[in-house]
Image 1 (tube, rainbow, N blue to C red):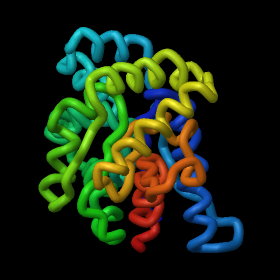
Image 2 (cartoon, rainbow, N blue to C red):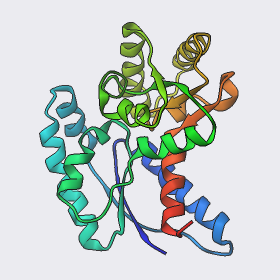
Image 3 (cartoon, helix red, strand yellow):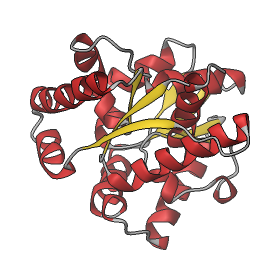
Image 4 (tube, rainbow, N blue to C red):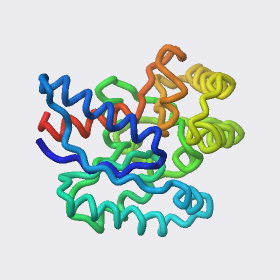
Length: 230
């Protein structure tokens, strides 16, 4: 079994979900008392969020590269960054380590293609929804991407950082997310990517009429299967 290096804490609630899903998949696949070999470095999210807001992505890359190197030195066979937005600087981190980073958008694109999804809604932080680092991974796989309008983008971003990252689950915010998804589905979207590892804490498949692709579940499952060579 390979050792998974989790780069987490962004934020810690979703990192817990990664740990749980990875171990559940390993147990299901191997049976008995099997569990995953995991190394976890959980960062302090406070300064990272400030650097995001200020556009200082180079500082985030410096912080996470140090911890990725530490995971490599400790024996990780590959790295899983437990956050969607932080994949903006995944290429920079990859340059500084010798083990692979399993990219969350590439893992998601694989599942979308298997499900014959050609047009998908992308929900996440404003960085994920408005910049190209994530969307291009999907587009390169032949998948058309739609995002909400600007006011909804800001509303979602506030829900993520001011509520979900603080462990707050609001029914009003849940309904806002559901309304955005249903509106875009009427414009031809065949599915929705929960492209922030916290949104899955708020929206579930039973809440909407189109298929939900939870990136936390997809990414963690991919990591678990890679660890056991499946």
